[in-house]
Image (cartoon, rainbow, N blue to C red; front, side, top):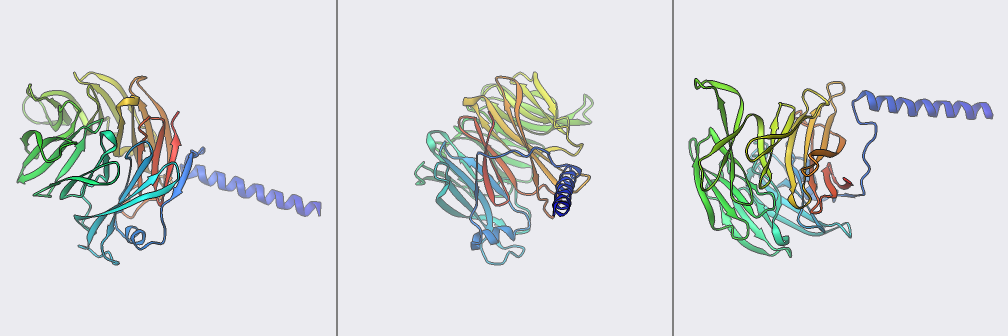
Length: 381
């Protein structure tokens, strides 16, 4: 009897060790983070099945306020999801205290299935006083904290329409297509979305990327040498209402965003990022480091009150083909990354790292992560 017991324990030990070795060999983190709480999104419903049938799926998460979390996604408006099928934007508003869905909303969009969802899809955008905005692609909607629609702004030409919100949510940069290589860029106050605060016109070679709470705009364009030839990297310039655009940094490799009125986050080093002052001085720089293909993906989540910003990077493991997504929290007062969370993510058919999004809480102490069909809350203290 003892021999059988020892044999069983040996086999069990070997199975556990084998699983651990397999986990490490696939490049997955050995110490998976544990959430404070986790909530499965509704399964089995028709809308969830339609969302899962999309060739490219999009999940977005945001704190509408300290107690309500928004998880939004695109679904097909018909049971099938053939190419050209209209898509709807849907959102679940989750009460963090009760872990229940407080409200579900749905909107029509100009997007269609299997044509590639444009980058302008952003989900719910929190603004001051508990209000939030929803951008459907052809409409900008303003809602109260009680889910009452307050305002609507129609977008006349939805081709390449995009928007970005300022760090506190008080300003919005709306980019609309006017014609070949011509765009209208409007800075809007989020408590009066029908009115333009300032308006400028840009070309396809220089684009408005971010706005701060004072209405200053970051524009990104091609980097050129003194002789006019194309140089490596992109240029990010600061444009204010009273001064001409001034170049700040010439080695950008992606986007740039205000994280407060005077500080800028930029993609750089191909596989890293920089923190810049408003004068263009590099305050901090780092590489993600896990892999040469490790790149920043997704959105920044910014909380000026806590001096913190969160963002993510992702890559496909060259050893296993598994998707890896990492969420970072950067403290601007300390000038360093204070938290890194690493997750294994199922890859999608396009070679991407699958569904993953993150958002920092209003107090900067917790991070919401949505992946697959669950939303999770993690401590970043």
